[in-house]
Length: 192
Image: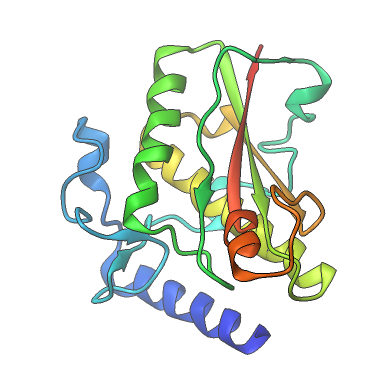
């Protein structure tokens, strides 16, 4: 399982070097269309997915505190007037399926319309794998969503990430039905 994750990360890094950013059309206001239309986020060119064109080194830490700030939940109020659908991932994957991208777009539109709001992207995993592996996988899932939000024009200082690994399941269970619902990225919206 660790080897396949490393191979996927290598493939994504290689695609960054070869293809560059596929979402340049997002910065011109055409969200969700352009060269990446019909594809998802996070894998190599030529597959059914495309990269965000960003890597973790360009955007600062992805370990919860965001761009040098303390966690939003320490000084902001959690918003209860909005509830965004989770983004679901495949097994052992950081690839955002095409059908899930609209969920991230909805969060980007909300943040764009509400400059006084910020988001914590929470990465989650199913129960399979070691705790350490699942924490890293959850962080990578949150990071790929964060990078897409930045590509949509949301300032990186308004986005923090947190990984819960397998510690915060949405559904209890030990079968594919439960695991599929636990492999996700959640959005916690806060008011400054």
